[in-house]
Image 1 (cartoon, helix red, strand yellow):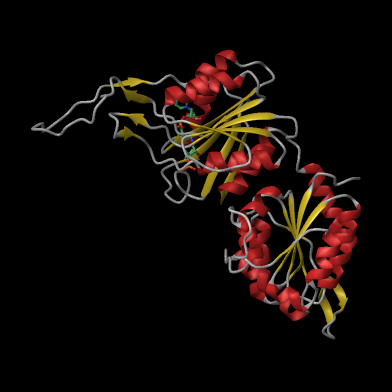
Image 2 (cartoon, rainbow, N blue to C red; image 1 turned 90 degrees about the vertical axis):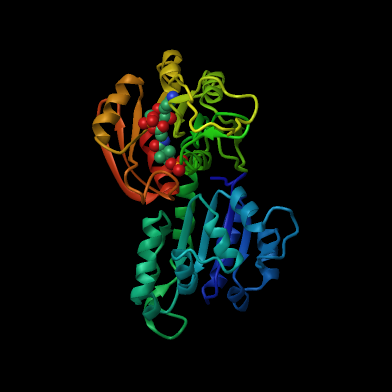
Length: 393
Ligand code: PMT
């Protein structure tokens, strides 16, 4: 196996097992991976920057604010890598990651990283068994981190117990397994829409909705990390390594999606598209004047999914979202039929904790045969991966 073209970040935290990470780096380099070492200040007590620089043949990263480029280091490193390994992962860094603390480059990088992460903890056996450490491990595992538990035996601190870094061969094997299967969308072209459309009233005002674009952007990020050629059609401006088309209105979204659709394998409509637009928008700002009321006449927007379903080929996949506050599943199933969809992702927007403008969502994935898969409240960035795996499995 070769890891040519794969970018791997090795995070090293302060623990005696850090010397074993050098062997892991050597093995990854032998497989032609591009390895970058990111170390915590405590890791410097156990392994030198010179050793890591020589082994990785790259710069070693430690200081958060020592930035030579315009883009913050934690963002550019996070964007470019395929896999993040933290070997060894100390109780301290595990605690920070599980609680969203970003007080050094490594923890900031993890918070900005949306691709697979492998953690190989190593510490004293009593620390490993500490209930807070265990809670944090469970939390990280639930969030999708791959944990390679420590092994039992004689520990460097003189104790006998569980806490020794897992065998380097085992960690390498997991990395290879993930890198080979995580690219299951390689060769697929996917359009994903995100955000709420803005229907102009005059040059200043518009009719909009509360969609933040988080769900659609999480899907685009996940699809990209799985190897897809992604086009994000979005009303929200973001800077990402894939193609983005920014627009505002439902009519512009229809036009754009229609233009792109013939070249893609799938369309996922996570955008909240306005059902109506203002019939005649004013060229100038509408003045309040002496008026007590004004009336806006709204006309129906075309249904983008329905329009696209008319030109859809059998081998193309059409996925809609369904935002409802009542009779969610019943309405979602009706939409599968009326919009001729392969899948619909139903989310209950009456729950303020999920859906619109939240980092979380809870959905039911329904296919065209009316099979249902319920996913409980999950971070949108994790949910996006689950949705893609279900759609393309
Ligand atoms: O953006 P976030 O803050 O992260 O919130 C995510 C979300 C709640 C917006 C998202 O999860 C979601 O539910 N998006 C779809 C919202 C919606 O418009 O639902 P709907 O039930 O009205 O429409 C059903 C489907 O038809 C949707 O896929 C929609 O994109 C599509 N549609 C709707 C109207 C229209 N004119 N054309 C369409 O294609």
